[in-house]
Image (tube, rainbow, N blue to C red; front, side, top):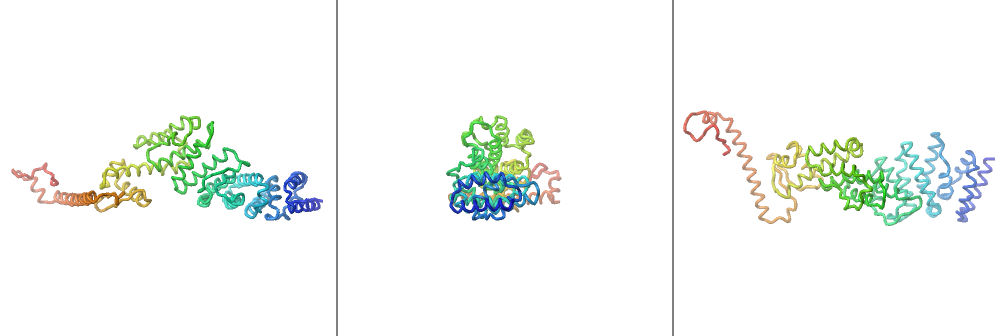
Length: 415
């Protein structure tokens, strides 16, 4: 009997699909699915093809809850994955809302069983099937970026998130869906260290029309503040810059993260971190805060280039508030390797020559810079000579000799 019911429904499905009567087919499926038993449903599914029966499979898989057993859950996940890879684009347009709802359900189940990685490519395929235009946004974009972030497959999201949104498909979409997408987009760009685009995404999230506080906006403000520190140094994320009002961010949260942004000394930073407490110790924020803290030091070094052309590592460490010459050398090397600073380091002499905008400097400035390098070299040589003379027997004899000689105990050979 189950087989006969399944076969009878399959005949109707194939006929209505061939005639393109998807509205009628939807009514038949909704009415029939409630009466189908597990065995009949399995028989029906085994005869449905993802290409030929895209509409039918979408509705059945959406309205059928996967069983709790591992085998049946695996079967449901595999069927949905296959559908999203091979669906008929024309048929999919007839059940766009249902396909998006199925993508949400699919993503939720994969996250619940900790298999986010499996859903990345199927959802990416579905995004392209739903619309050829990469600037059109659907709720599938949010689920896709969420799975990419969760599964640490962020590079796979690049060709989707690099496009700006020009229009939104309203089916199964609400403001929270768009805001969550901007949040995940900013997080992914942060992971990929594309901080300018990450900051842009967080600013778009904070500027999204909203008249109430939201957990998504609060999280976006935290990450946006840290990314802003990495890009711009000790500057807080100005509210006027992104156009959001006080109602969106609690004053307590704004005060905590503004303090983190503007802290410039070790004491101020330690105080701001202590005030932020456990909130900053969250694994995701903590990793970004480590980069922001490093960036604060780099920006202090970068600021020195507006005043100095040549500096010793010791002087750089002192002016930038670094712990040692070794830390100064490590940070300058990293800045040079990432293109943040153009400089030449003479490790033997412990001198750094800043080369920013060298092409625009006049010949006189370049000549002066060379002279300063010569002075630095001479100073180093004199320092070594002084050190060697201080430990020489002749020097010791002279300073201990009680005569009217100009060489006395308080004379520095450097002078």
